[in-house]
Length: 370
Image (cartoon, rainbow, N blue to C red; front, side, top):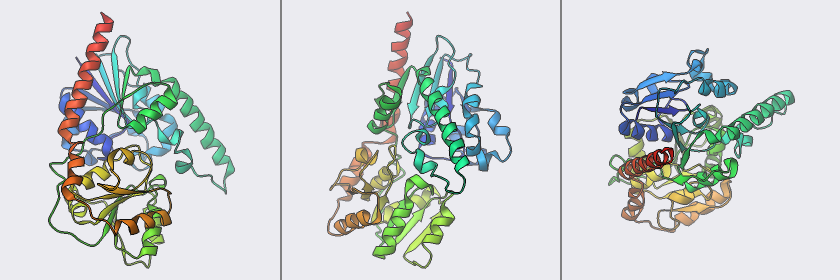
């Protein structure tokens, strides 16, 4: 079957792009359709396929300001002509699942999340502007229209598979559609335990509001323990400023995969303060044999085993996190047991499961067609 893969945008190698790499391996002759493509930030495996971009690619300052073009995303995703394809596979956390499907063709969607800024994370992405109430009204109207369009176009997909039960529940809640679940892959061959232990905690997150890196900073300002923060984003400078004068807190910004593996392997524990869709980071830490201290919401509930591979804190604030860290200090964890949990999410397992799922849904679709 001639295959098109639709992915929201290509400007970094995050969890969604790790899924895309596997799809590229399964469908090496496919064409990728994406809103925008920043070549030097994408792996060779993805760049090995033909990539077709939308008109968004040619807009001014697009790589730095692409989020400002959000109201144009529906028009851009619907501009793709997919009429020459038998199978459309979307990898979607925003608008990719709403690509226009030719009549009689099959559309499968791996859904990382329904667009979070239009639903449960709206207030995190768009906090009220106290100095510009007109902007609040404009943003609210844009999001209402986007939400209505998102729900209206949900049925363009024939079958959904979600990255977690957490997201399957949201697909059911917002779209009224049942989804299967296949957890994302973890590269357990790359992320492995090391023999050296060092005295620091680690957090690895994008510097954006809903990731709640601020909670971790406030906790470590109080407990004075060593913390290394990895990640970049629009709030980086603000968060650095909040940690000024605290020598126990160090920012490393963006790091290579090799440095990331080293940081995972030597840390005492990973701090994960976010209500995440699923979250590969806690499993990468576990693949390196390190426990996770996570906020007890979202995808972490499906990847962290309390008391065995980590601990949870129940309120999204510094005091609750510090209470969990104090509890952590009195416990011991088994590296091999922690890694064994991560092995259940291995890349090879994901590749086989997603391949079987695509095959089964294709056969089901073709038998209906007959």
